[in-house]
Image 1 (cartoon, rainbow, N blue to C red):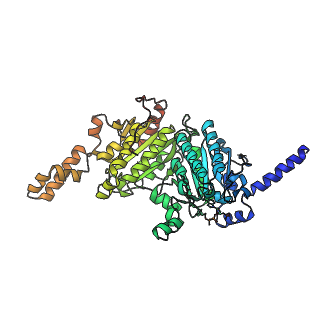
Image 2: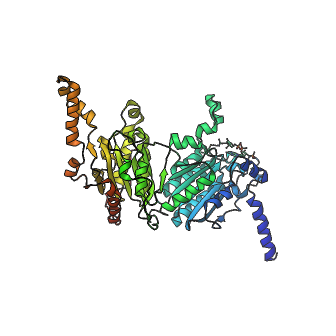
Image 3: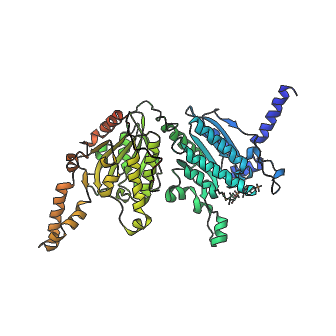
Length: 514
Ligand code: HXC
């Protein structure tokens, strides 16, 4: 056959394969408000940059009449491309082909692109839209998942791994996204659960919709499984592109620096934080005044709002922020906020991103609920993550730093490189009211006017400890600075820590309180 005819033959084959599960299945996909797998890849990557591999792969199952079935590309598309000109590996499950179910060859395609990503040291994006393990393939499908989970773990902390849930992600399939760094979900489209509604109905007799069980809001607000929530697929793709611009390609590189831009002007730092330590404010407004253009990519915005985490740039360079949020639960640390912050600190540390900590908290949340939920174990994750991190670590105490919160929020004792405090900062074992009630209990009880005595003792305690100078006298704080000088001090600290190098005892790995 002449080459021209062979090219025509190739084009015909490709045309058929591009149709995935066929026009009817594509129409069904569209009618449920979803894009096709190929459209999703094209929308995320730079225009014209996608190169697809393994389009001719066929499934390898001969049971349950499968030998007569053709599954285009075995229900998953893999390839490489670029985002902002930087190389990326990507896969997208194609729900129009056998419900995007994962058979042995489907899994082999995913593991092939995962191996490329790891070998080439480039980020991996995985788009999940699948009914889970292909039921007809039995243990071969389960083996496929195991191979994926193993690679997710090997790649963890080496290359960024991004999961996008754009349809069902059912059964054991959820564990690949759970092992990756960032999970993106879209309202009304993403559904993530271990056990589906049908099984729950059979086993427990309960009627529950997939949305209630594991929709986008559930995972962004309640479970903490998702890191980014979007209203539409298009918004989700923009979020992914913005995140990739902020982070490095692998753990041997630093995030790409861009031209510095002036920080946000919407708020004045000295006016954001009220001097009364009991009055709440939105710490995101403080961050706005510190980062270039006021642009801040908040991670897990809707989960454990008492701590704010995310990325911004200072003088054109990426920084990770960890900030108590006085607007929610007075900014206390609890089980969820500790988990949220600890994981983010480890991400920043793995990928050479300096951490700026903004501190204003009354301590860990007291109460039986938290104690029984394991606040000791969860809270310890913060201590572990900060102590372990060797990237530049800078803390600014904006107002309160009480008790365990003072230590946990990147104190000098966990090896902060620089600790700054505003003049109205209060550093103490606990708030003056609580402290006076305990240590001056007898004086208050025996006083002629207990209320007056209590006030007097609170003031006494405040005068002694509710200021930054006791800590500064010990060198626990490097400098007491004005709010207006905060950015200047952080920027200088970042610039002098560029070549920070810390030697740690040799070990295989630590045993964090997972
Ligand atoms: C084989 C599957 C499939 C699967 C869907 N399909 N899931 N084929 N194995 N797991 C096929 C359907 O038969 C159908 O084929 C097509 O995909 C589209 O599915 P529909 O059911 O028509 O779509 P929809 O109504 O949108 O429902 C989607 C769904 C539902 C909610 C995902 O299909 C579903 O509940 N599937 C099973 C989910 C599940 O329990 N998976 C196994 C989990 S256990 P036709 O030919 O009719 O178009 C697991 C263990 C892994 O994953 C453990 C790893 C550690």
